[in-house]
Length: 208
Image 1: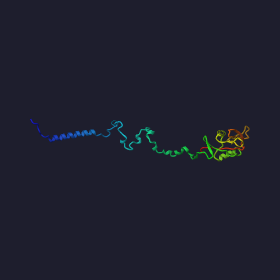
Image 2: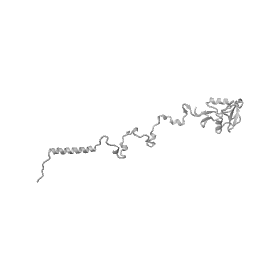
Image 3: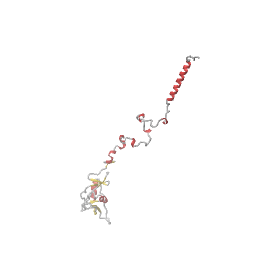
Image 4: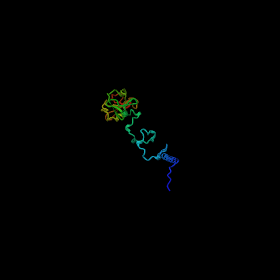
């Protein structure tokens, strides 16, 4: 018997086409990603590279706090902190709060205090010496201050009046005959009258 050679009916052709279209659409839907369907589980390790991140895409809020170190930052590209605009000269500041922060001319800095480097001429007594220092913005050093700098500044030979008067003023046990003391270059401390001719140096605070 010969097989029937009838052509497929139009209805059959339409059904076959519909089936093909349906199957193709289903396959395409399986390949299309839905919105918010990709999460961290779908990303392979190290799959997001630098080239796949847009410029300026990572902001500060996306960086964990205290996670960046000096190795992560190119420090040479950082700008100057606004509140530190004068920090460049802070290590050698000439003023502090508008006050001079340097030793006057003719003085030297010893342990935070500025001292005259040479003796002044011999005035008549400690009161005149104190006035002389006050006129220059300084004061008479104490006995122990003078004693401690005797090897740095020449305090005189010790032969009157070539010694340095200290800021001491006191009376004897009777309450009269007031005295002061002097210190010479050897460190010798001598009691003299307050009116005796004496030489002196002045001390000055570093910040005035």
